[in-house]
Length: 185
Image: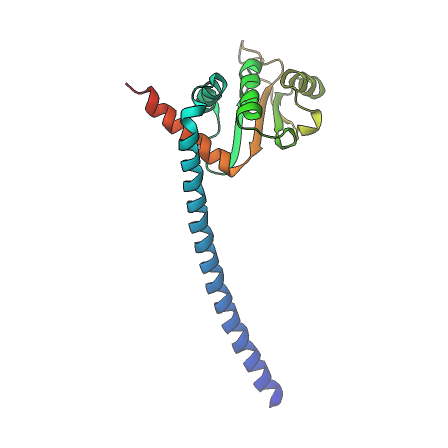
């Protein structure tokens, strides 16, 4: 009799704890969401305050315009741009380094190459061209060759330059919005 009674109490307490923990997690997640919204609004405010000074900087405007056209604008906290034009990527990486003040160890590069391109040669090319350490390159994605389908060859593949930073991701989207407002007539 004792064991049945103990087992029944244990099950009842377990159910009660599970419900309490579930309610607690829901409350915590709601609070996290509220805090994230407040942080993002603070980032947007900081971006608006900095914009008037930054818009005098040609690299800021060029980097922002390139990012507006080619960059990742999802809301996951990642700032990234993929392209095969080395000059465009040189401008964007200068924007990351000089305007956004992204530290070198935070910068990452990922390559997308066709199977008729040598991976090591492509990494060497992009590393030298963008002055980014080879250790900052993550796994290369190899795609089936398109050489029979197109006249436009991509001799060194496409390079994605990125870093993760929620604050800068939010600020960039705010600056793009402000630049858009400035350019409308």
